[in-house]
Amino acid sequence: MHSALIAAASLSLCATAAAQQQLDPSRLRPATEIQRHGVYDLASGTWQSPAPESSGLVVFDNTCPPSLGATFIALQDCEDLYDEGRVPSTGDPMAPSKATDDNRIRLFELSYCTDAPTGTVDVKVAFWNNIGASCFGGIPPTPPPIPSTATAYFDLGAAAGYPLPGSSIPGRVECHTVALAVPAPGFCLKSDGDGIYDANPDLDLFTWSFQHENAGSQTGPVLAGDPMLSAPGSCTYDLPCGAGCGSGLGAEDRFWVNLDGDAANGTNSGNCPNGVIAGTACYFFGGYPNNPFASFYLRLESGGPCAGCTGNASIYCTAKVNSAGCTPSIDFSGLPSGSAASGFKINVQNLIPNQPGILFYSRSGAVSAPFFGGTLCVERPLSRTPVMNTGGGGVACGGTLAIDFNAFIAGGNDPGLVAGRDVWLQAWSKDPGFMPANDVSLSDAVQFTICP
Image (tube, rainbow, N blue to C red; front, side):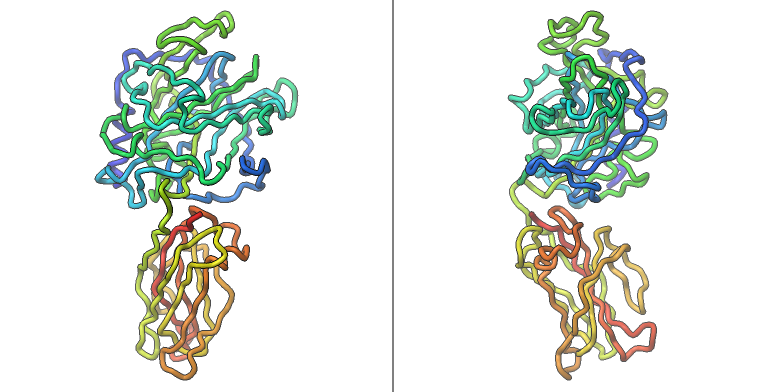
């Protein structure tokens, strides 16, 4: 599975592009002391700080810092920058297990540098499903109009009411990583460009753009993605990150620049200052790995398929047979939801009666490890519900545990339980029929995704 994604990404890394041009190295500036901020909620216009951990399923992650040092590209007033990536669909025979054919993007994270003062930063970001062409062949596509053709367009400028952080000292370049929470239900981005895997980079990529409107400033996106540090496609869906960061699947060692109103391979624009260095064309920085990888920081989180959310609940792992010879069994009913006050019930049966018990869960993943004479099914760190009693009178194996997990979420017991979050949950209760320290009962486990 992992090797298939690496191979797909390697295809783009090794391609030759005769028309690709090397950008003047002076356009790259050091990106020092990048400040990480909280999540800005575009619906409420408020910051959520400090930044919470990932609240959804990451479907694209191009965040690894370049091994040659953090840099950003300073865009000129007339330039719009376009980059690309790929979100694999179910049509890929080796797609990750949680792949979907489209994704409801609820959050995107970008990193940029600017000397524009805080309160004046004017950045605009747009996303497209497949536009039918890319710089893979070295010939720049016809630049799509912004924002009229974009799948999603975000004016993050101060004039539009979005106070992106900038420079705190006049003339000093400062760098920032910000996450933007998209108003519900999010925007729909098709996997593999159109929901279908074509094994063709020009057809399987999405495109995004970075614009800025701060005249005369040093403003631009931070470079990211290092395929030698983290395999391309890592952190996508349920693939592990390895180095703790991702090199985005489909992110090519090239990007394209559009001079306002200029045709492909043109260098003239009435909006450009004299002595413009670049033109409307495909660019790189001289070729990775001897030079920086020509892609930019972007992370996308999904709340699930565009058509809806099923919760994807399933039972897994092996329960510990208790001292009465019964096997504890976990079950569920309803739909897990981050907004409903009730409706997702988890029940555990065949427990020793009249004993204390809890449900404990993880937001990190599944595991199979020895645990109190049974099997631990959920990966640490662990969280738990309040202590309950199994009840059941004097009936052997008549004990039960039950909870409405939606009510538990709605009660604010764990701020990390939000839409898009995967949860792995198991039951523990006392079993005095076993010798200490194995005098516990353990159920099998349930895995589910929290729907909106």
